Image (cartoon, rainbow, N blue to C red; front, side, top):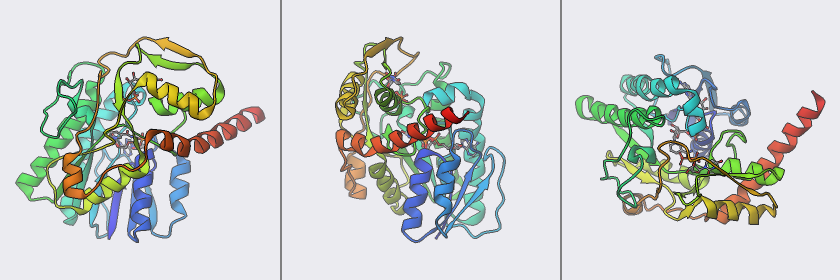
Length: 319
Ligand code: NAD
Ligand code: UDP
């Protein structure tokens, strides 16, 4: 198959591209590098079946190739990024999704949308099954991301219903691992970088809010299986083991052996208090569940960040 992956220079997109390349498919990555990394794209360039197009998918994209699948992963994803890039985030979730649905329709290709647990907002149902409609503040700071993804889901279902497009929607829960940008601002990368540097660990609020963290290899395997399934309704893919942010800090400190202090900072506006996927649908339909627990995943991620920091510090010394 020949597959288009938008956001291929990003964290998840690059791992997903590698999964398809490893399975013998060709991948066209599309990225404008707004939050992506040249290093991720260069890594994928080593595969014969990979080619990258530098393009903003909020603008239509026309390709001569026959395409079998379009997986739309382009979007700022870290709260720090999407708060800095609110309009770009709304555009890539709305216009970008419509353009990529249009590309899939023109090519008769299957379309998969990277949606998010953020469609559940600050949830009042816990854990969150796919049937929960969510609790989102449309005019709060996080609304630019949450509402863009909710619109993207609605647009994807409309292309399915009205155009008969073959579509999939994955609701991704907090995922971490190698190839995240050290400065991307999400909690796992922040805590690991802070611990490795001996800087204070920045805990927002009292640290009692929860998240459920999935190692990237597990996440990508679930998405790969969903793409190959016949499920049109959204599917949660995430690790159901729930941790407080304070527990995460303790695990990172133990696994790094760091003596960083804990620093208490204000809680961001509308920060969800809890988050945990109900993955019964993924288990039953995709025969999928995560295999890597949080400690093992953190251990597998440490050497990547160590290398990034060594390189960054070496570069800083030569400037
Ligand atoms: P990321 O920031 O590492 O990657 C996003 C990529 O999209 C970047 O390479 C960026 O340059 C590219 N991009 C953004 N806007 C673009 C545009 N207009 N045109 C072309 N390229 C553009 O983020 P990620 O963590 O890899 O997230 C990937 C996708 O998965 C996003 O859609 C995100 O909403 C979704 N998601 C991720 C998580 C997670 O925990 N990582 C959780 C839920 C949903
Ligand atoms: N968080 C934190 N310290 C940080 C970064 C994040 O305490 O340095 C908290 C944040 O307030 C949230 C959780 O960690 O409650 C997860 O944040 P992240 O930005 O990773 O993603 P979110 O799940 O909020 O989209």
